[in-house]
Amino acid sequence: MGEWVGRGRKARRCYGFDEIALVPGGVTINPKETDTSWELAGKRYKVPILAAAMDGVVDVNFAVAMSKLGGIAVLNLNGVQTRYNDPGEVLEKISHANPEEATKLVQSLYLRPVQEKLIAKRIKEIKAKKGVAVVSAIPQDAEKFGKIAQNSGADIFVIQSTVISVKHISSEYKVVDLAKFIKSMKIPVILGNCVTYSVALELMEAGPSAILVGIGPGAACTTRGVLGIGVPQVTATSDVAAARDFYYKKTTKYIPIITDGGMDSGGDICKAFACGADAVMVGSAFARAKEAPGKGYHWGMATPHANLPRGTRIHVGTTGTLEEILLGPAKLDDGSQNLVGALMTSMGNLGARNIREMQLTDIIIAPSIKTEGKIMQRVQRVGMGK
Image (cartoon, rainbow, N blue to C red; front, side):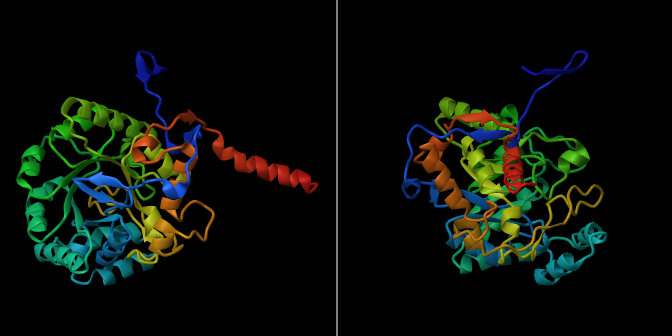
């Protein structure tokens, strides 16, 4: 499988969301009678959408608001929330910085070390307000932050890096044993990110409660541009879903996969589920919420990297409340609001009663679908004599 790209060198053709479409089913269902819930570590969540662990998206109040709407928001333990007593001042500086200064400013602000007392404080603040406390850290900090998070009442711990593997090699620092770490934790652990069948299988063997899928696809991340690394999300999700299903047949343990990044509309989210996702994680969509701490700005987790920033601060604006973006009613027609409503409507037209049935939807390659709007514009111009 693959195409020749040079003498003796083959490359596999992969696909992104803009290149596919979903085929309507032979049966249609009332969207209100579809079930969008999903299960993670024995607990059922009404909304299969997570807010990404990005400082412009999630703070304590956002996490609480997301929880009350039936979803999950992930707080970044390597971000400004755990480096500053008053992160609001820092976020204000970032949002007002000139475009030329933004990356340097972000880098300088993230030089302050993480304060362990603030990890406990933020988690306790979320729990005190009856929110679901889900927190994220890079692998190097997992053992230290994981215990603090667990003892502070966190519900779920996420180990997340640009690329994760169980075979990480380093002579400079201690490498975390993922399987051993997960066994030592009394709360569920999610691992990410990966994009291939083989790595996903190895990660599942370590015993996580879920796997994150996606390297370099997000709007605020430039990993593919800077490092040349990444797999388009349609192919990545499909490959990891195949690994999940194989692992389930082998062990009877079902480990959900979460497509992380690269979705900027309800249509993309629907396609992710059709490709095999159990849930999705999005950043830019929620960065547009009035409740988002970034005040209309969004930047990736690798943006503040001291030596090789991979990302940029982008202006996404503020388009509505979190509830409007997640559950509607939509006030815009660009697919950026009422994400759950879009999913339910899509499921109804596809004849899928639940997420598992959504994963069985027929997919077609339709790379020209984006031109249809242009065709309609030409028809209208002709009709007006232009």
